[in-house]
Image (cartoon, rainbow, N blue to C red; front, side, top):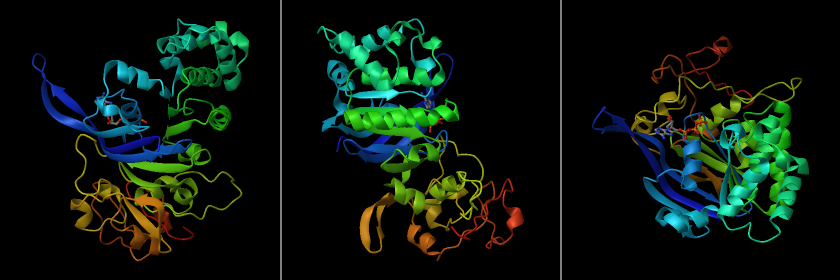
Length: 372
Ligand SMILES: Nc1ncnc2c1ncn2[C@@H]1O[C@H](COP(=O)(O)OP(=O)(O)OP(=O)(O)O)[C@@H](O)[C@H]1O
């Protein structure tokens, strides 16, 4: 296991007061994450905007203060490291950001940008440093002439290649890529994703790939974790997750992913997510998804937070984990979905869902089970 995260919490204090800051509450951005990544694996982390994905990615690189929990990187607990030790450890873990323009110093040439990290980790002392720069550019598919250019002189896709080269420059083991393609044109997205895949094969890298778009992570990820309000609600091998999602939230996210071929009839279940993500400063009690869940059962879902547990499939406990009290009953059809209103109150008169005209209604989720 290269990365082993246990019970991680990152809470941001909410301060009030002009002169004396008072803490009046907390944003529970990450609130009990357990996640393991094997060496050489690509782990896709998905979820709606605001569910805590970026905070989690930043926290495991110790770019955020950890409120509680353990982050073991190759056996070393990062939570206990400080100063020089932490700085040395950081060389092994690098980040690729969504917006390379915002994360690359506009006054530095590509050469300066690439040398900066290498210099900080004592990697420019040997005379091979320039050879390494040439290799880096070749690896990310940029010409050698790129070295003397500034970030604004590149297209979005090329700039992301510079961002990737910079992450690679210190020879890391783990790369956290936070929405690496969501700012790029669709036509360029696949090129950058393919580049990440090629680099992994060539260099044996391990990735945590963060994205709100499930389609982006599907093909490159070995495993996928779905995050909701600060914690994982489901995790499985990528194919299992996409073909047999168990958590109602995952089912809702997947039913929103368009079918790539317009000539193929979309027979999947349609579950509309009702309302906005609740505030992470005031998360719902019990299961955090209960206010939007079409399978919510009173009162267990409202009061008891489900643990992330391994489910048995055909009597075998595999690697599919889900945090739902009723995953098996939902999968078997024993529990039927019902409509959800914005307030999160289920309407007992709407326990069937054969009124297709209601599909697409703004305030109500009507899951259909035909073909799902
Ligand atoms: N430094 C901070 N101080 C206070 N609250 C923060 C801070 N950073 C993030 N948050 C809050 O924590 C929650 C989780 O944010 P985060 O950026 O991790 O989510 P996300 O899933 O990555 O969303 P996005 O894709 O929009 O970045 C949000 O409500 C956000 O406003």
